[in-house]
Image (cartoon, rainbow, N blue to C red; front, side, top):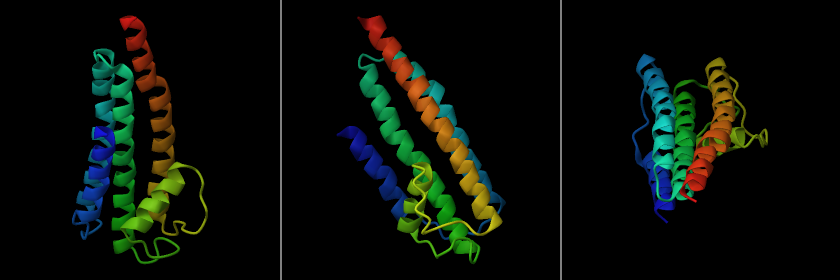
Length: 155
């Protein structure tokens, strides 16, 4: 329940946060910082999982909160790009459209109803593809591997 509430809070903040800003060096710095911070959380969470009384719960919580944070970070980038670069996507994006697009890229469904047209949008989509693959690998191998090791150590 706590994990769902935290995930909901992440999405809620995305919808209420002011995103009407210019696409400038500060925007890219905030985006890069967000990626770095999310990546930096992984080793900290692995240590927390290894020392946890409930390692599987801790791993699920990490994924259940970390994944929405990652998706919202990219949705925010797409929203700012769409607001600042005319024709960046095949259609204008509001926050829901940007989140939807982020999910279709992450899940590799790619319906094709929304596609990046501007170079900047395509670059961010490529970054999301790579980060998504790395995130899935980290989740599968590192986080759940740490949970398995901690659970075996407890038994």
